[in-house]
Image (cartoon, rainbow, N blue to C red):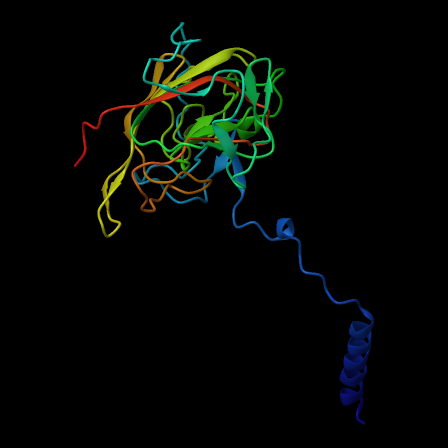
Length: 286
Ligand code: MG
């Protein structure tokens, strides 16, 4: 055999033999997959520049360059507000019987500690469904604060189980603006950063109008949300662009006129108390 043919043959034999002795290749674990994105930092704010553009054409989803909401020191507002007579009390400090685990539908992993519901191991959602609503709740961020950006005191209020008003400890903690406290996650930054320091109770008073779809599933009117954070307007009848998701500008999937309220567990123990909701009359039904 000419040497030009011997070498490739030897190499092929060696490779085949070697391969035969190797164990079958293991599938790569999911986390080892090449991420189709990468985080960047701008002026100390971590975010993304490889995400879709927002419809305004100016900012990427989770854009670290999007202006930070102005910091406003809140006054007093609705702390410990007692529920109106027609409210449904979702948590009064005693038990979580109005809630179930969002994923399993079973009992919640959250615990009631000193009159507060503390997030743990899974999102929870109400057993009841709601349409247009007024919602009051209070939350308390963990102390001492740990983590930064999205990793500090992350939770969330999901209207109809899918439209997130972000809960985060943004007290002296910056993150991409569309993921800040009282933001419509990934879409609309809050109009102000009215965060209290971690360890202090804070309030959300939310007015929400459900989106409407026609019989074919076409969006007729978007959902609208108004949010007071510690008495400071953070969302002003803001149109929601669809279900809120990480690195997504929001997308609607047709659904019915009511849905549950969900609270997020996002690896941080965030406490909640005094949660009540009441239906509000429809004034902008198409
Ligand atoms: Mg969240």
